[in-house]
Length: 197
Image 1 (cartoon, rainbow, N blue to C red):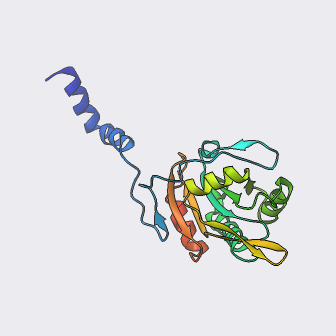
Image 2 (image 1 turned 90 degrees about the vertical axis):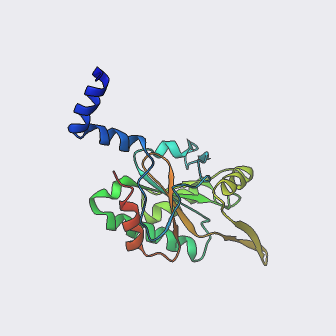
C-alpha cells in the first residue's frame, strides 16, 4: 500500500475525507415552498447603480443571502406588499436577520430617480437597497432574470405591468430560489433559512 493510500485511509477513518468530498460536490438539495432554481442557467448577475451612484453586482453581496425583487416605486399594490413581506421575513429570521440583504431593482428608471429609490426602500427598512440602470441596462437585467415588464399608458401617464417573483441567492452568489408573490413570509423564511451558513 502506498503512502498516499495509507493517508487517505487515515483521513477517511477520522471522517475528514467525506467532509472534503461534500465540499467538492453540488449544493445540497432544497426542500422549499418556493421553486428550487439551483440548476437554473439564468439570473447569474447584474451590474446596476445604487443611490449614491456606486455600481453593484451579485458578488458585492457574497457572505449574505441576497433577495431581489423587480418593481417600481409608483406601484400601487404588488411592490409595497413584496417589500412589506421582506420586512416580515427579516423579523422572522431573528438573530440571522442581518444575514439577509434585500435589493429592489426598478423597472421604471425614467421616473425612479436614485433619491426616490432610496426614500422608497428606506421607508420599509434602512438596510434595503434600491438599484437602477439605464433603459438598456434595465432591459438587459430583466432578460437575464426572465422578468416580464411593460409600460402601460394610463391617461396622461403610465403604469408598469411586471412579474412578481422574488429571487434568492445563496451566500456564494448563486441563484437558488424564486419565491412567488402569494407565498407567506413564514414559508419564505423557512426557505431562506436553508441557505443560511
